[in-house]
Figure 1 (cartoon, helix red, strand yellow):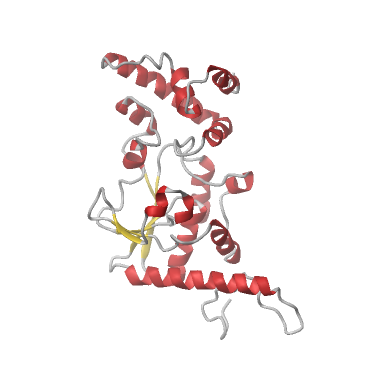
Figure 2 (tube, one colour):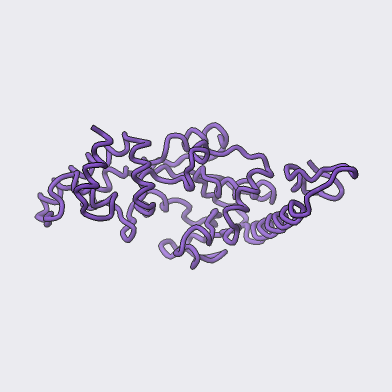
Amino acid sequence: MKSQRDPEGYFGGFGLHKTCDEAVDPMLIQQSFFLKQRIDTAIDRIRSFCPEDGYYGAFSGGKDSQVIYQLLLMAGVKFDAHFSRTTVDPPEVTRFIRDHYPDVKFHKPATTMWKLIVKKRMPPTRRVRYCCEWLKEVHGHGRVVVTGIRWQESVKRRARKMVEMCYKDSSKVYVNPIIDWTTEEVWDFIISQELPYCSLYDEGFKRIGCVMCPMARYKQRLREAERWPGFFRAYMRAFGKMLEGRERAGLKTDRWKSAEDVMTWWILERDDHQAAERLFSMFE
């Protein structure tokens, strides 16, 4: 909705179109105008760094990438949106993207998570995140990539900059327009724009990413293992083949005698036989 006072239509979903006789909560007004400032700043950033060939929009189907997609539309800049499939994406996410963002281009990976585990002869960990390098960060070469990365997401991301060059691919530049936004501001924006969002958020998921991602806390990975048992079993099969490969290569496997041992160490972040019994009892 646009008006002379609100030419960009930012307040259409903010509930601020009141008559003179209706009272408006001052806190709501302050919050809404602060969010409008955030939006204006993000749009200015987007317009300032947009290349002639347009942005490469990194789209995950999560709330932050939705905000970026909407801001790109509001900024009126050229862009094309892309979703890098990882083979461990929640099915709810892929369905949501296909249903609500049909113009997003899906990229099929050159390999799968399961084959990578066997190839690398170890599971992906917090310190060795080879999965991201092979499955998520391979696209956007030679482009200016716009993302929804935010400082509040993690300690590591607090070191990120609003504009930065990819240290693995010097031809790629990242622009992170909402890097200083809070999670509350992200949701305020989604609500104000009346955007649909993935159903997993209504189930209590705080983040949407790869199933049983090693960057998630072990309780979250346990929850995901129970939520998507097919992925749990696929990881188990991959761990079994990984151990066979390690044995053929003459690598020590003193800690891991079975796929169950690998899963216990990987998902629980420690060797805990009692916890392992509880874990595997979920899938008996």
